Structures are given as C-alpha cells and as structure tokens.
Length: 371
Ligand SMILES: *Cc1c(COP(=O)(O)O)cnc(C)c1O
Image (cartoon, rainbow, N blue to C red; front, side, top):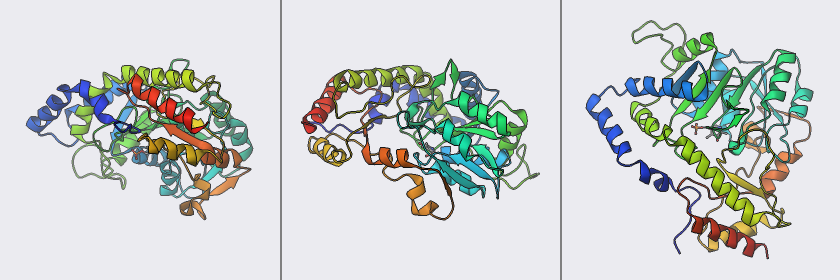
C-alpha cells in the first residue's frame, strides 16, 4: 500500500503543468526578479478576488501579520487579544512590534476565539484583536467587529489558513482593517516557497505597508521615510500564484467535497466529534480536524501510521503553555477549551487531488482503530 501523506502537493500540481513551468520560464527570460510585473498583476487580481482596495505581497504570512500590526501603530505597552490555539506565528507577530499577546480561549466547537470572552478581556491597554480563521473556518467577525467598535480597537484577521473562506459572501481578509495571508506551500493558495499577502481597504494603511515591505521607501531610490524591512513577494512565486489562483475555487470546492465524504463515513460514531458543521460562513477546510477521546488520540494516530496513513496534531501545545511566551504574554480567564482541544485533536489528510480510495482507506483505518 502506498503511504497517504497529510498533503500531496504533487497531486494538485499535476493538472497545472505545463502552465507552471511556462510561468517560471517567462520570469527567467524577463529577469525583473524583484517587484516585477507578476507581483503587481497578482496584487491587482487578488484585490479583486478578495474584494479589497489593496492586496500587498510580502515575504511570508508571518511578515504579513507583523507589517499589518506595525502599520496599524500597535507597539510597546499595547495589549493584543488573540487565541492561544493557533500556529505560533500569530503571537510572534504581536511580540515583534513590542506588544503583549493576551490569550483568550476559543469556542469548544468552532476552535475559533470566543467573542464573549474577548469582550471580558478588554482593558484600558487593549489596542487590537487578532482573530484566526483556524483550519479554514471563519471566526465570528460580526461579533468581533462589534466589540472593536465599542472599544475603539483595531481588528486584524489572521487569514493564513482561510483563503476563500467567507461570511455572507464577504471574504476573510476583507472584514476588518487588515487581513494577513500566507502562501506557504501547503496553504489553500500555496506558492513553491515562502510568501505572504496583506489586504486592506484603508489607503493610508496600504501606503505605510508598501513602504515597510521595501526598506521604508515609496519608490525605488534612496529616500527612506521610515526604518522598514526587506519583505517582498518573490516574482517567480507571484507568477506561480497567478496560475494557481485560477484553480483556487476548484481546489477549495474539492476540499469541501473531501470533508463531506469524511463526514458521511465518520458521522454518527460516538467517539468521533466531527468539525463544526453549522459554523459561521463558508469553511474551506485547510484542515479536517476531529476530536477524539483524550486517552485514544495518540493510539489512533499510531494505528493510522501502522497502515502508512499520515495524520497530524495541530496543535499539541497551546501558545500560553509554550516556553517562548512564558513571560511575554498574559492569560485571560480559563483557557481550558484550548488545552482540551490540544489533547484531543487529530487532523486527517486533505488536499486537492486526494482520491476516493484514499479517503476510504483513511476512514476504514480510523474506524478500525476505534473498535
Ligand atoms: C502558516 C501560518 C502563519 C504563518 O505563515 P508563514 O507564511 O508560514 O509565515 C500564521 N498564522 C497561521 C494561523 C498559520 O497557519
């Protein structure tokens, strides 16, 4: 039996050949490798696709978060409310600008930050809320925007896992001051290397971000208005992303079909808690993550591995329990949902190009492991 990986990028790329190869060759011939025509074209295409005035490429999703927070004026002494059940980059970006991450628990079913607890966590030092659309499921943006409005807070979305997720037709990344996307290869819109994107419809914020990503200058030259960074999206990656963008809808639809197939096969089992079905908005299943009984999770993962089936624990240690944030963060209230989910979660393989027989093998192995 062939192994089933968490993500098989080859299965998605197969049908993009030879367009990907041609796109790369064209950049090699053109030689405008930094902030060239593909970066500008991609930025325009993505702004349109996402329904925002500005989409600005940068070097990674982590940088997208960092630059958005910095451009929004978040800095030392400020508190930023964020969930502890996410990838560490979310909170790293808060630390980079000198602000303090305030960890607020997630909802037990959606795995996204719980607006009720966010409201209770606001202090006079709170400046921003940074929700994550975890695993491709939109966070409750309407409730969070209400809290931001009431307390005059900046709202910025971590959209690294949610390209194409939407609430009432509004894309994630278009429902706040700024959205931060990642083009890490395994993300829903992935490059063949690192890359990131900041979205905003605020002209002044966009202007600040354009300078920050390119050494604090407005145009090529040697007038530097602020101390910025070298955080540009690579031209070859932009060319690749333009090809992949034309398939993104189909790829997300495929992820949703795979999730449906998992639901049909695994639903109804009393030891399996499926991902939230009646969640907010359109889920794009960056991950398909179930909850299992705490004392079974690791054994189930091992039996899948014995049958050459990959699975993953995203994320085993919530950020408030990470040594990196032991002294550099604030915990607000109980974080027991995050801790419990971390002990119970298991993500199954899901990727465009995954075949029915592979889905069936994963489900059979999982159900056998629970016998
Ligand atoms: C991947 C990811 C990031 C960081 O993106 P990079 O492009 O790898 O820097 C940030 N937040 C979340 C939730 C992510 O999944």
